[in-house]
Image (tube, protein in one colour):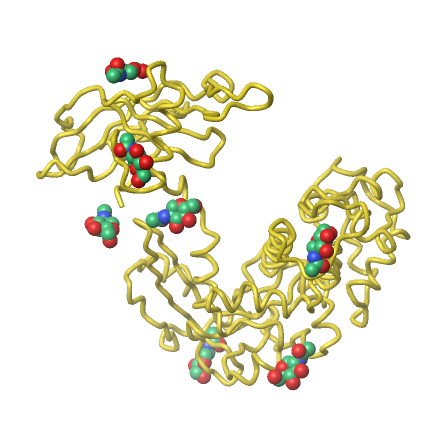
Length: 445
Ligand SMILES: *[C@@H]1O[C@H](CO)[C@@H](O)[C@H](O)[C@H]1NC(C)=O
Ligand SMILES: *[C@@H]1O[C@H](CO)[C@@H](O)[C@H](O)[C@H]1NC(C)=O
Ligand SMILES: *[C@@H]1O[C@H](CO)[C@@H](O)[C@H](O)[C@H]1NC(C)=O
Ligand SMILES: *[C@@H]1O[C@H](CO)[C@@H](O)[C@H](O)[C@H]1NC(C)=O
Ligand SMILES: *[C@@H]1O[C@H](CO)[C@@H](O)[C@H](O)[C@H]1NC(C)=O
Ligand SMILES: *[C@@H]1O[C@H](CO)[C@@H](O)[C@H](O)[C@H]1NC(C)=O
Ligand SMILES: *[C@@H]1O[C@H](CO)[C@@H](O)[C@H](O)[C@H]1NC(C)=O
């Protein structure tokens, strides 16, 4: 059952429980969407899962990022107990393998602690850094061993987290009384199915084991570390690895299998709960998971600040303009352009003003637009190596960043509303407004 729970978890959204009896529509109890992000179609689809006995109850959160603000919406359908208590947006579910993202993030945070000197333990003698490329053998020399010598020596954190160690699932090798360490110490007896990085092959084993690294190098339990470094900062107040805490909150859903029979939840045994924490131990609800989603959601291109020539009002602009001036032949920047610096694959960006136009008929809100040509390149204002004279590395051929057309849309008062980078990326051209056609659209904030 343990293996079953974990094995289903990564293909099915386990934010649900199951029932055999499609209830008549009269039984339907749905919390309503307040922010209007959950359409009637989505709601009907969710209700269909309950009507078709795929779940006894379920919850949904929708997170929308726009203009640097987050909008969320919640809905719930069906029940969370066999007594007919309704599922609510705050109902806690075991989120199964979605828990794995918290382990990966926790490792990243611990690596960051070491990178910035916030570590509370030392790395083994002779090991200088702890990153996703660090070898397991370097960090856990007395524990880490695989049957295959090459895989044993070469596997790094990235390999373990990416399911490419060559070890396949082997779900029957562990028991509920194992610990991350007691499991890891037996990896050397397991025949690998593939060579290192030969084949992606989903396995819980490494996610069961890796909390041992957090515990060893943070001097906290894995659960304490994730709680203090992720749940608390993100205000995920209901989220926990501790079933007693979840039960005491009165929000925990009961567990059901697809036949609709109620089953005990695996975390009832604290030893088992501790063992599966990294691979599938989180209990959370739609409200808290929306906070998590808003944090990890892809913010696209993020933000970038362009400065007008002569803008000395912030150290950022003074620095960006100085960098560009440093590579100019006459020591001053072209006044017909905007300048930026940015910690990306290239370090600097410049938009050179071409002309003013009126936007074409494709645009909903007609107005004027300013056209620019974008250049992305890396600048070394202090040179590099022995040669300390400023220079620029023209990376346009290397990274295929050609000079790109930029269209900035202006409002009635001539203020920029936003800018579209029009032909930065290859692919089919889109139709419609500047915003729709742009490969990258930047809102002015
Ligand atoms: C984005 O946010 C800013 C500041 O809150 C606001 O002035 C602007 O109107 C917003 N833009 C859009 C497109 O919602
Ligand atoms: C949920 O509980 C209500 C009230 O007890 C009941 O009528 C309904 O059939 C239950 N729904 C499901 C899907 O079991
Ligand atoms: C942090 O890690 C470095 C590298 O291993 C080590 O030299 C240092 O002593 C550690 N700091 C603490 C407080 O253990
Ligand atoms: C779980 O929470 C309960 C209640 O707060 C506490 O007594 C128990 O020690 C916790 N278990 C673990 C493993 O932290
Ligand atoms: C801009 O991006 C930086 C770096 O990612 C971030 O720290 C900052 O909060 C962002 N600013 C805004 C206004 O979103
Ligand atoms: C910008 O400000 C700095 C310090 O405030 C000053 O030293 C510098 O000369 C100024 N540069 C320009 C171009 O005004
Ligand atoms: C300096 O050179 C830039 C081109 O790099 C040019 O646009 C600008 O007009 C020149 N400034 C002066 C003062 O000659």
